[in-house]
Length: 289
Image (tube, rainbow, N blue to C red; front, side, top):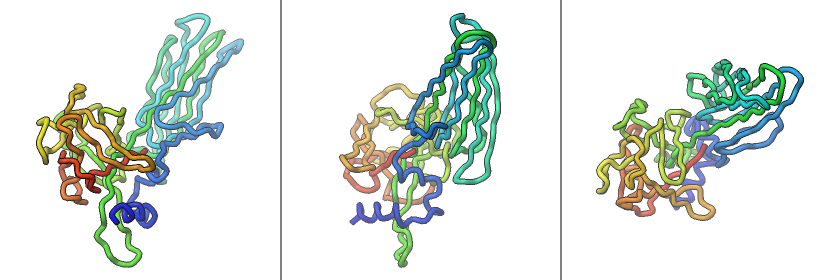
């Protein structure tokens, strides 16, 4: 019954309750290029140009939930030629107002520059870049971007009225958004892009350059923290998702406990813990961009 209710919530929950998680329904992190192709997760695109004077390369990409975007430029046959990368990045959150950042960088090739992103929390972004070689020859440019993921659990609303949503998403968050070692991992809303942005490489859950950590290396109900990544067993997580499923437990390598929403609560800023793995809905987490 719990599994049926949880899946029904995807259909019945209104946008106000799952604001910022609409992309979770598709299960992908889409990025549509100017040619209409779709890219996912971390992606690179390449461009080559040869002209008698000032060859240039252009990229126009729409990206959902970007964490970082960079452009690498290389000139040939000579190295050390100057090239200029200029860019405009425009982002909005949930269809709201648009925030834009522009910039440019000139340097001797080969080099790579990270594009400045809007300071607001950015959900849907349009990235336009132009790379121009100052001189004669060939130019190669590579656009690389990475997208964030949210670590989500669904919790019941408790509203039994007809037509009311059955459940909604809650997300793994940094309590103070300090991006400082020792910050507590808590339950929060999913209506923010960067505040709930994580990367998972099959071993570590990283937010703001810090790893989700069991600070005491054992024991039920230990409150989780963000610490410097050290590759230790108390920072190594396995996301166990069965065939045809989108959610499953995050299991700590040692002492083999699960990421847990204590008492299956929906209270914002509840400290998240590790607990004996029991297959309950309070341990079923979804990764979604």
